[in-house]
Image (tube, rainbow, N blue to C red; front, side, top):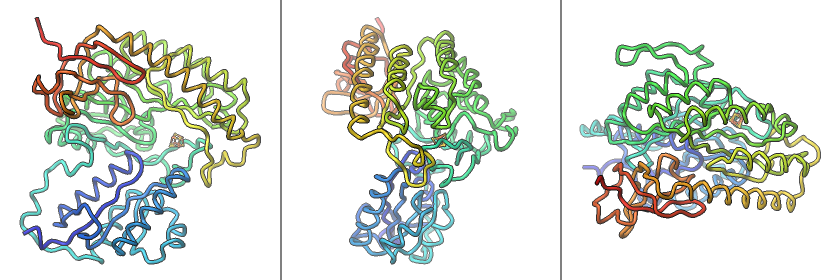
Length: 443
Ligand code: SF4
């Protein structure tokens, strides 16, 4: 029966938030009876979900559109780059339709026009929790769109607008369905997770007969009821983040915070239009570790921001050395078309940016290696992602998928582990990024 259904190809680019948009569109396509096909030849029409965050993402998105035009010719474009439709039209005037992020209705309209759906009584067989692009045992949970900040290097607010929070009961119901569908780890994403609910004045909603505020803490309490791992991403360093650390200490949500600090020099933070009170951040980190000693802190930093002097950069190195974050990503500053930071004077020469990045990464690699070595001899609760030969490839509570390290379980296959299984692992070795161990059996 499905062979007679209209067929859609799908190309998904960009960040986890764009991935969530893709999942929504794919779910709707499936609900309406479209077949999803993995190649251009079989597709009657191709949807490309684009990213427009930095120049390299724009180029990648335009390449993807170009490939789909050349290989198929019937192309619907959506996503962040869709906000700049003139860029797309100039390169590919014949694309069928262009829409911006979260504009599911426009994408579906364009698909209906190009390829009317056929009635199929079996279309309701789509699982209740929708279709996911991530492996079955973890899923991204998008809680809001847009952002009220105006960091000078970022154009997301101009592309996605101000913060719009999803009602807390809707998010909790979606999370519950995901868990019923086999998900073991929920990854909470947004542009600014800690601002959740500000726009709706923390409106209360009911879930399972209990009132929950549309607010980060209440959301975490609700998610904590589901009995799976909940991991928070993109948390802005606000004081009220302190309120959720006890939930981590109690084991309700994972003791893990992805909190982009971006820099540690108050002068550069001010130029970035980010919170500049770095001493408060230092105190806050110390307090979090007092309340929850096992907390894993991940952060990202930008080096070579316009105006960054050697002194500013050394302030950043001192901060990293002092606070010893567990996981760190760093990027050299690259101007994004339309960002306010482009107008700042004193841009840093490329070779200086690269040299600073190398020094930063060398220091962090050393810290990471030492911190992971401290885990040798401990037992870590892990979630298995895959089986690779003899090994099970897993992650501990300290490791988010895609961006952090792994735990290689040497006897994983013999122990009969499967993706999605939780297992205690005795850690026997470590390197800069990963841990190695064996299944821990009770004596
Ligand atoms: S917090 Fe700053 S970097 Fe993040 S989306 Fe908002 S404006 Fe952009």
